[in-house]
Every structure is written in C-alpha cells, then in structure tokens.
Image 1 (cartoon, rainbow, N blue to C red):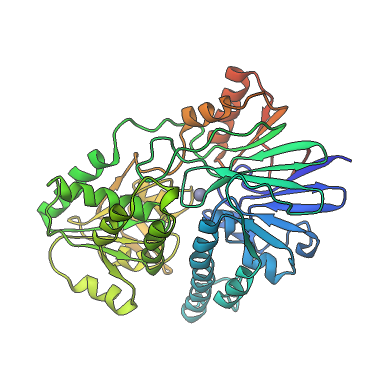
Image 2 (tube, rainbow, N blue to C red):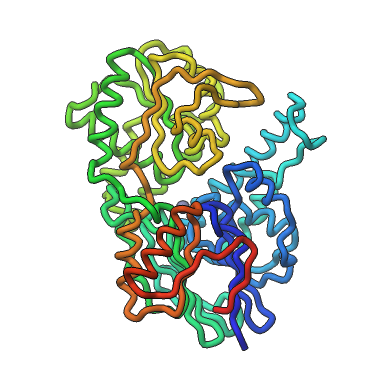
Length: 454
Ligand SMILES: [Zn+2]
C-alpha cells in the first residue's frame, strides 16, 4: 500500500504549511498553517481544503508560529475531530497565539465593515477567538524523542529543531516508509535557542528553504542594533520594532538588555513591549528553561528589559511619552496587530525609525518597508514613510543555506528524495540546485496542491 504526500501549503511560498500524508485510507496532516503575505495567498485561506477535514485522522504541529498552526481552529470548525500532537511548549504557545489570531481576525473584519473598505459584505473572520479556544481542546502533548501513534499503525517522533520554543522536526513511519519533515530549522548559533538536532534517517525529507538562497552575515545582532538605537536615541526619535510575539520579541529584549549592560545604550532609554502575547511568551521561557540557552535568572533579566504593556490604554499612552524610546509590538511583518497603530503614529517623521527584525514575506508591509517604499497602506489609508528603516540581517530565527545543507548532510544515508518547501521560489530552487549538485540527491520543489508518491 503506497504512501502519498500532498502539498496543501508551504509549497513555493513560506506560509500556509500543510502537508497531508495519506496511506491506506488514513490521513495525517503535518502542520496546519495560515497563508500570509500577498493577497492571492491570503485568499487561499478561504478556499476549502481538497480533503474534508472530518476525513483527516490526526494532525502533528511542528511548532506554534501561525503560518504552521493558524489554520487549525478553522480545521476544527470545519469538522476535524482527531488529535493534534505537539510538544508542551508548542501547546502553551498555541494557547496564546491561536485565540489571538481569532481575535485579530474578528477585529479586522469588524474594522473593515465599519470603514467599508472590504470587498466582502459583510467581511467575516475565518474563525473567532471562541473557535480557537474550542480547538485547543484537541491538542495532545508529547515529549521529544518519544514514539507515539497518531493513527493506528502509524508511528511518529519529534526532534528538536531550534528556531523557537517547542519547535520540532517530525519523523512519520507508515507503510514501510520513513518521512521526515524538517519544520522550521533554527540556526546553530542562535543566541537564545539550542542548535537543531541532527536529522534521523529517512527515505523522504521535506525540508524548509526560507533562506535557501542566502547566507547570514557574520555580524551579530548587537553590532547591528547597537549603532542604530544609539543614533535614534541621539536624535530623540521613536523606534518601532515589529516583532513576532514568539521568538523575535525575546531575542530583541535579550539583545537590548545586553547592550544596556555593556553600556552601549543609555540605561534610561525606555523600551516598551506592547504585545500581551509577547509578554506571556516571555514568561514561558522560564517554564521551559531546559529548551533554550538562558537560565532562570537570565529569563527574568530579559523580562525586566522592557516595560510590559498589556492594556490598550497604556498602548495609546506610549504616544504621549516625549523623548527617545523603543516600542516592540507584533506582528513581525506588520501584517496586523498593535504595531500598525504605532506605525501610523511614527512613520511620518524622519527622526523615527522602523527596525525590521527577521524574514519579511513578499507582499507584507514589512517587505514593502524593507524595499524602501515611499508610503504604506494601513487601515485603508496611505501613510508617508519618512522614518529611517533599518533591517537587521542578523536577527533571523532560521538556518541559512549553508546551515540547511549542513543539517541535511548529517543524514546517515541519502534519502530517495528531498522535497524543498517553505521558501519563496528563488530560495527553494536555489536550495534544490545545491542539494542536487553538491550532494547528488534527487530534490524537487513541489507545486501547490500537488500529490507525490513517498
Ligand atoms: Zn516558524
């Protein structure tokens, strides 16, 4: 009985990761992410899946980032009744991220209806905060390296992928085949996260390629961030830092803390973490202290770097604070969240700064800013961009092309095939070419929606 993989997302793009494994009438979905970025990608979130969710038996989530987990409440809403397996840290993060994702969608739909700029009448959220909370009941936690049976006759095992708290690669054994999904791989030299584990032996590997065509600069984040924020403090501006609530927010807090401790930044420079999710996530680092490089005391230091903003009133009050300051707010690619209000507030003044901290998917506001756009569309209105835009090249949570190759090379035997996913076309194809030419393995970039024999 053959094993098939269908690429329902994360193929030719970094977002929407959803890989359906089918064998003998049973189906398991590896990751269940939302599409983000270009509108034509986001519209895919509204397309029905080619498989009825009720006919999917189980889900495995590699990690909690919304482009890997954000479709899950919709899957449940549309009839998925199985379990979704993940690490405890991923579950803890999903408890924060998924209800927030539902809440954001409700807010956006409500805002679009009120302002009348949606083409859909009325604009509807994909799912609500309540839907997301309901879906959480189907999460089941499993320890790293523990073999579990997501479906009768199927075995699965999670290994540490670095990247963010709880992130894993997953090995699925079914029908005599060993399928390895890399998940998002972190970098071995990450300041906070541990290096990804070497991959277990597999017949088929589905490997991410976010940075498949790039190598990270040797420069560290302190060397990039220090001079930028010093410049900002000197001219009395405000730095808006769009951050992912999970991962980048903590990396930035840790970096700012180190800069202040070294005396490279004024101790009194106010730093705000304006994201209730990021605040909660930062606290989780202490609960899962064995899964990253910081000890409990360092976790608490990281929490103390910023003034934590949880209420909307406090968020708005930040704008009335005079003098230089740094505001970290989600989302990381400025696709939504409180950072949008801060951008409308600060984009127009050349004393201010926007610090982009990680990968910016094409089509997002973050990518437009990185490309030097003169104006940015937010809440249906154009805002002139006069603030300095700084892109940190060293703050990525992903392995670069060399590090991805090094990870793959640790496989004890060449796999029959590598599917290169989770990358823009150029990045995915560049990694495919390196795998074929340097390792002599069969590699391909699957098309969205395509089905392959494993
Ligand atoms: Zn991720």
